[in-house]
Length: 374
Image (tube, rainbow, N blue to C red; front, side, top):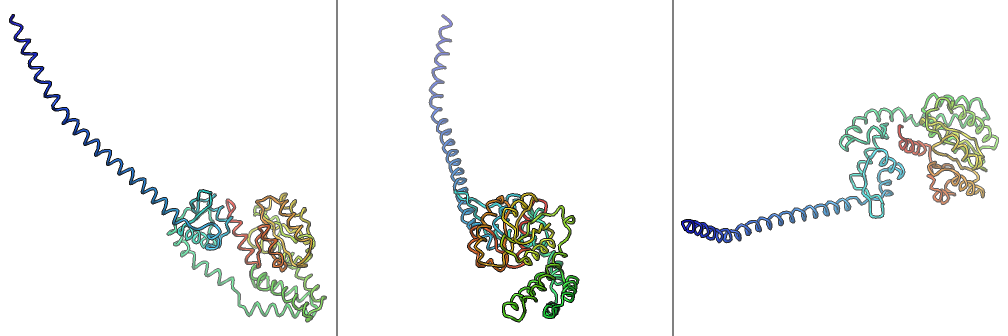
């Protein structure tokens, strides 16, 4: 009997607490709900901000990267092949790509490639400078400038000296004096650098001989005598192959039907002066033999001189056959007086036309920069 009031009291107390918890629960839930809404709202804003930021950044990158590789090649003076090689081997620039995989370059990419070209033209190896920032490249170019200017000053001879030497050579030719011509050629080799001798003395001399023969001021005997002496001289200027065993190799010749070889000989001498190992096959070489020599020797390129006759009907077939037989990674570069008449054929074969020995040197430098380790 005494227990009943206590039990009743306990029961009454429990009953009285439950309404308090039930009444508090909506307030707790409301607070949690409001916090959840604020958190979700913050997350949504952040996600939206990041999404918009990425879209904006992507849009800006695409907008800035607007130059295709052909345009970049024109802006920088670098061939598309060399630009791709610098990207692949040295990560010199990192262009964006369109949905179809086409490269697009920004203005900064173009400016950087210009700096890399200037530094490499000054003698710097691309493998050494590809990781430099644009600021570092600018400082390096500025640092190299006095040395480059000094070298260029040495390379540029007095124009009157060059003209006087050529005039003396023409006198020796008119007099049918091979000994005097040979002595003058030798004197020129001591007086001038090889590029200057080839470009400013020998090449203009050959043009003067050709013009004189066509105009009648020189006889065929004059031309034959001069050609024989110059051929012997150029052959002697080509170094022994053993000196260039570690150098990249290049095949130099004239295609079948092209008998004039002095241009090819000058290119061969130019290649040697630029640190290449020229493999000279002589004139009038069939396409099959050129291809075999290039593959067997591990040549990096084939250089052809086409001079006369310009309208040789066999020439297109020979050049197409050579292109088919050579691996795709061995380019053919072509020069000579007959190139202009055959320019559509060269475009078909994707063969660069090099209209001077200076252009040959620039092209060889581009090829060499694309090789790992050079």
